[in-house]
Image 1 (cartoon, helix red, strand yellow):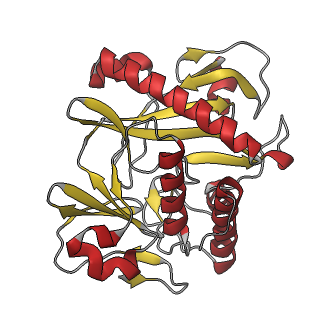
Image 2: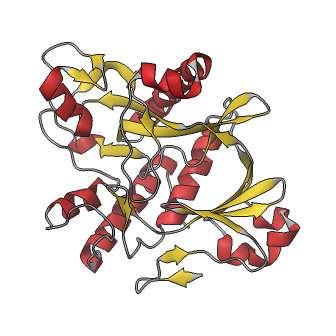
Length: 299
């Protein structure tokens, strides 16, 4: 395992296991019929991975994803186990991997990311100001920044590799990529999950402004894969700080994006080193989101 100066896990290395891929956050290893997902503490912004990480971030992401998988037990997902002792070849690594690793089924990921927006913010707000639309979806007049939409909208995007930028695409373009039947299923599931999660989160004092889901096909069935409803894949706002016509404070990595926007950086790799103050304030936001949603501190 490779750590940075603040003990954030930057790279996972498991003796005897084949590394399949290092994503922006997760390191994925081959386990025969299954895969091992390890959530590192790496953090990306503008599709660039920063050179240093956020301590405990990977454990917070894993814990929240596990919570949502359980909360939405009606929805099929890729989780096999989060207990490394269940898998003989991983038992000796159980202590190191505890809280940040899961074993998952192998599914064929869809070639698009499924984004649901419930509030008008970020690129959606910029889009609306220019055209009155968001990702080709025409909206009514009169919306203000950060205002809740009349209903959540489905705005898919392409999947870019590390260092490249995802691009919003129209529903029609998504149909061209994965087919009409799959798009309709992914859209309906995405909106259903978003509504379910938003209702729960609001009771815990968090507004989920928007979020990204990933789905895969397993035995012909569409299942939820990867992380779900975390501060990496979602925009979380503390409800008590929310105001329309402003950019609400976040409990997610928007804090890092906002800091990076103050730098003379062209948003291409390599990313700048994050100061310790930014690192630990970001850690507080991730752990704060975890505590609000789940009701206890990250152990």
